[in-house]
Structure formats: structure tokens, C-alpha cells
Amino acid sequence: MICMMKRKRKPLPEYYKSWEKLLAWVDEDTRTTAKKIGAHIKAKFENVVAIPRGRYFCFYKGKPSTKSIFAAFLLTKEYLKVRIKTDPRKFKDPKRLVKEKTYRKWFFTKGEEREFIVPKHSEAENYMYAIELIKQSYELAK
Image 1 (tube, rainbow, N blue to C red):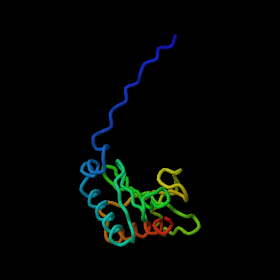
Image 2: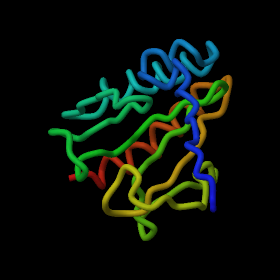
Image 3: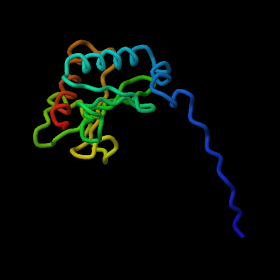
Image 4: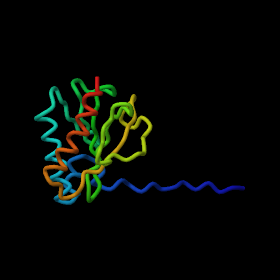
């Protein structure tokens, strides 16, 4: 006879429960980077809706939907990861910041979903390069 024991799941850490708590948990440089790039997206791109979704922060072109999402912020203690939608035929990344790995429909239903890390202690040049990568995804959003 096989003994079936119930596994106790560890509760989620407190900082996983909301974007605000996660943002408070990360280091100062990561928090500043996320806020700075997020503010730039909202100010410079047209018709952007930005919504925290649990421990992620999502950016939509117009009404929030799976077709209008163009970027998602994911945080670790020490860096900002950005997921974007890419079209392999048109996508340009001369600095090769975006990882080759593609994700299967985590945030985006169409296109290749890829990720990049915004370098720590980013200079204005690196911020603008990250914005340019996000802009390519914005242009693909419906």
C-alpha cells in the first residue's frame, strides 16, 4: 500500500504578492531603472495603458488585451527583465541584448516573445537602446 502524503506548499514570499511590494524589495538601482523606463514609455509612446498584474507590470497599446500588450516588466532583486514581442523578419538588435530564447505565449499570443535584461547602472545610451527595443514591440501591437 502506497502512503499518500499531502505536500505542503510553501507560501509565496510577501514581495511576490504585488508589484508595489516587489518594487520595494528590489535594490535601489533596479527600482530606479524600472521607474525611469516605465515613465519614458508612458510619456513618449501614444495611447499607452500601464497596469500592474500581480508581480508583473504590463504595457498595452490602447485597451488592455492579449493583442495590445507590447512589454512586460519582470523584476529580480538585482535587475529589470523586459519581455517584448518580436517579429524575426523585422527585428533589429545590433547590440545583441535580446536573448535568443523564445517563450511560448506567456504574455503574447502572436509573434516571438523574447526577453532582455536592462544593464545595471545604465547610462542614457543603454536606456535609450532598451526603449528602442521596446518601441519595436510597440509597433507590432494591435
